[in-house]
Figure (cartoon, rainbow, N blue to C red):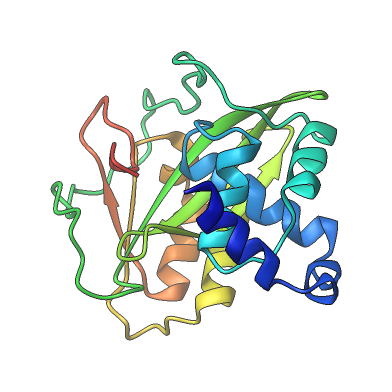
Length: 208
């Protein structure tokens, strides 16, 4: 397998590699880190970048991840990030564990997690398209407020342009950020139906 990945790495010209800025590459790295729940170190992150068609050298990935303190975690790599003990409205569980989706931009799922960096713990909110299993929106902040999930949703919306008639569903846990009036108003403006998991369950399916 190492030769396979080396082959694709060589296919990317030096010009192509330089074309992707460090900031842009860091977005992809953070998205992979979030989607894998911190399970990938730099070697597997580099291979995943190549698999997604992002031409980059492994030394660059290693250096960038080390610079920003992004590393693989052990089994206890995440802390509880959302508070479901509130009096805000709760949406019904419309997804109901139907994790197989036939088309893109029909079901998005969202969650918030911590990332350990040299600056300390940062909050990362992600939006994942359930069809492709790819991160389509994200937001990184020092504080966990409703703005972090709104920013992630807006990034996904303007990146994917699903349209208000797409019948899009957004599934999340019952955290106060997702149940907030401001977030629900954004969902309404975009014509997105809200779905929330049962109490004690996270928004993102366990196999993502």
